[in-house]
Image 1 (tube, rainbow, N blue to C red):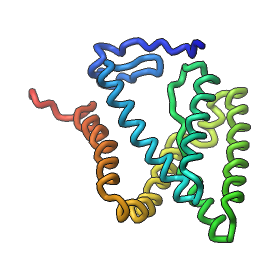
Image 2: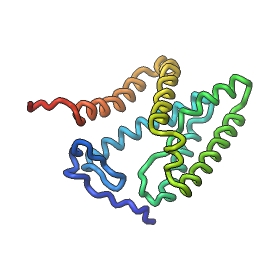
Image 3: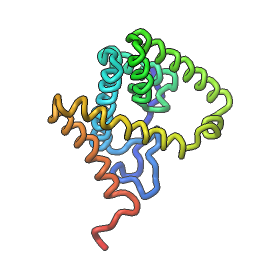
Image 4: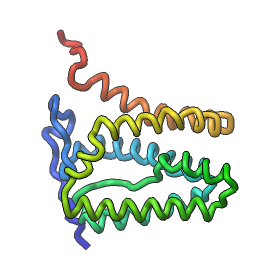
Length: 196
């Protein structure tokens, strides 16, 4: 089965030019691609495990369904958008409210299913009318702020849940996901040149 994935090497494969973007049909050198892929797997696996645990759901089922959803997504897009579909932490607040009011795992799962159905309908609307309807309703400044607030609000919950249980794993994941971003920020556009 052909997924349509035909990656071409971006530039020299080592360092994108300032302001350049590695498109979905491009890749860096294989060692860099493998390193970024490993970093992505560690970051996404952490979220895919933490989100269901915080909602009181089975993380094994969540990870399995994440894989199934990724396969369906890759088949639907014919590989044009390489992506891994993980769990969303945006449901944790709703799950906490449902649990606080005596709701069960079935209620939480049903709520997530209803949201999934609504997102499917939004996807059909975007396919029909284009991404402009999303940008009109939620410009990047809004979506960026929402993602940032979700992260800031959940950081203490995750830290208090997992740091006391397994400090070394938490530290390893934090360093493995944080160091590449720090290195990119330090060597990215606008950073100081050591030759000057």
